[in-house]
Image 1 (cartoon, rainbow, N blue to C red):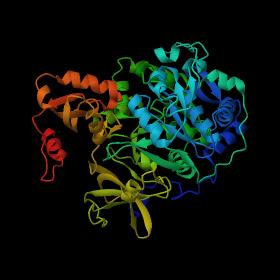
Image 2: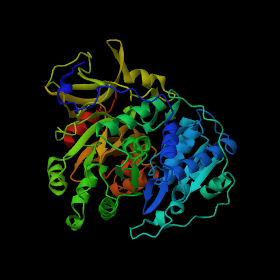
Image 3: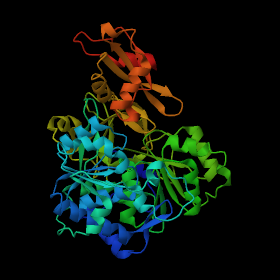
Image 4: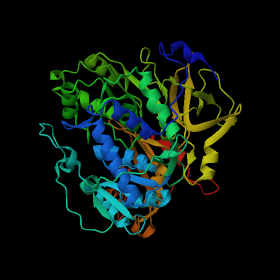
Length: 550
């Protein structure tokens, strides 16, 4: 392991941390005991105190245990947009000693069926506007669904723009196996004594990869604690800090910077259900927000607001994020507007957000940063696994306290994801990068097939597997195409069945995809071909198509 990066290490911070030997829920218990009346959440001008948040998480936990039969280690699906109920859903599951499985609210029925059957979850916490998508699973994959209306927590008058889903009143439920959120809260069932410890599973976000089906990433309370605690300390946060959470909470970056971290550090979170540039600016000004994690597409839209100069953004002390490189021109405009450098980090679902972050006092643009507390990251030859010298491109392998335990029910994929070097277990990220003389990591390419569209990871093999269910599609190969706004977008090269050629349009294929997969996965471009390039063994040569596109 090189120690070059310690030359730029944040001043006053240790090189490794001793993390709490507790569950994540215990962090909430401590915060609610210290600051019971302090707002933990502000949701469109409606506050939720730490004490209220804990009360509701406990009520949900009691219901999950007593009415739904949830026990230690059971999985619970959490399928909502950003909302107090998403967060309470996660912490209610944790209080019930269960494992929260956060799902992208853009997922559709076929995708949800896979998550439920693969994880073995029998219970889901769902937003009412998403209920239609998951209801077909009730009585089959699922036994119980708790249904939430966002408006239950938007209780105070506001001049902020509300989405239709947020403004909608609570709908009546008449289906066996479904319970309304307010019914669960009113029951006030006390959960049993907590039993989960640091090495029990806590969260299981899903990711895909080279195979067609998403895989559950097993994270313990210990691995989640590492970046929840370390991420805040890296930036010197204090309980007085107010955080704007505009990124989607199902994603590990927002989960850590906008939920788990603030609970540990006692911060107030100003929560947005959906991105809206005017609302974001108003909230920063109104609540004197000091920290905001974003992605490049949000920053571009934020800066494009013709009225942005009239807002008081002087409270901001930190802007950062990851998921995709921040274009240098956009970072320069952010600095001109706020006086702040955009601080980038790097991490994966398998590392529960950052394994690398730029030093706040010495950030470099379009840079992944340096390995954070206790992380040993190296650049190795992908074939020989020999460590490479500074300046040479190789695969990032990472050993650290935040690295996941493995893929759920997939020992083969787990074995392929790890390698032992000098007696330590390293995760193979599949990302190609170089490291400079000062220990900063810079992304150069990807070893794995993956499209990064506005920070959302799209795995071509998964999209291809779903497209093969189209009755007119014989073959499909999915690649990335350049996009001025999203960075990359999804393109499908499609071979139609012989009898359907000339009778099916690209628009029809795209419309079918919209009905069967989450919108961010849907190909924006469909190109028809008579055949796909293949190797002598019949394997589709996707790299040829990708290189031609570039």
